[in-house]
Amino acid sequence: MYFDIAMPLTLLAVVAISVLMSGKVEKRLKAVFEEREFKTKDAIILVAAITVTVSVVTFIPLSAVVTLFLFAFSLLLFIFAYIFSDCRKAVAKLCSMAFFVASFLIATLSFFMLFPLYIYVAYGALALYCLCGFSMVALFYEETRQHVRERWYLAAMPSVLFVILYVFFNRTPIWFPYLLDTYSLIFAVLITLYLGGLFTWKTSLVFTGLLTIADTVLVLVTGAMVSAATHLSDLGLPVFVILPTIPRVATNKGTLLVSLGLGDFFFSGLLAIQTYKKFGKSVAFLSTATMAFSFFMFEMFMFNFGVTAFPGTLMIISGWVPIVLLKYVMDKKSRNRVISLLP
Image 1 (cartoon, rainbow, N blue to C red):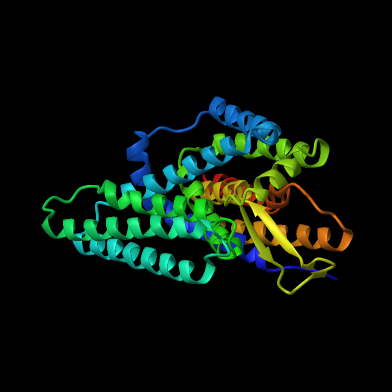
Image 2 (image 1 turned 120 degrees about the horizontal axis):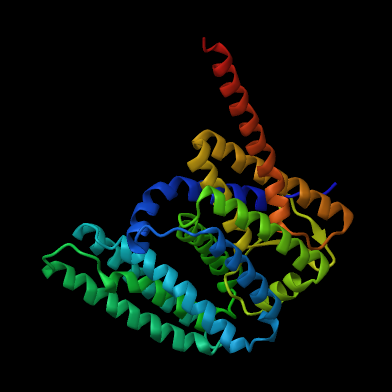
């Protein structure tokens, strides 16, 4: 019997981190969004937009897809870095130094180890040296900076580094699986935190319910989700977390790799965050564990019965629904007991 613990544990970790960080991040994000929240209509439109995008993405030119995703991911990195860039001067200097060292090391090592096998690495190294110089200028500027406000130059560094690494290194061995999975996990957490706070309990129920139906149709009926996933994975974009199975499952092509999209991580993170707001931390983490366990069971079923694709949302929500229903039943019994004890 084949099974895997790598992806379920990764799902568990990403969702748990998102829940723990949501309280601190949500206050800052709501200040940016001016306390806005999704309404039911917005949730329906979002599901419709996702469905249409998945259905037509294979017909969009590759350059347009890459440009769109790079812009979206870069903007996401910039927003999160910017809202936390009003830190102490010592922290800002440490971040600038970290980008200086990272840029220099990656540029130097890649140039000597990957060039001339990958010709674009030389241009990537040059771009990284430029980022290295920019980081040094920012470090010197911090010495004379008097006010403590957001720093656009500090917020720009993560986005610039990401774009450089993707554009010049996405066909090299360091991109897949190392950088690809690293950025995919980062974006999985950031997307969950970014959008999770915009939902209410009601809109999250509408959104997750409709998205589960749409995902099931797109995977099992039309197959559009599978085509879109294949299309995007060929581009090397960090839209999937791709891990080898643990324990190892061997195939004719080598070790079996399991992939899970960022949308599924966001889906599970949204459910956990809303459960945390509605029922508290204990129920939220219990539902997180059951979602991961449900994913584990479905994944084991797929391995042993030759199923290559299955709706991730259905795998996840199957573990969440029983916990929420059980909590509702327990709360209802508690209220009835209190009412019966009243004179």
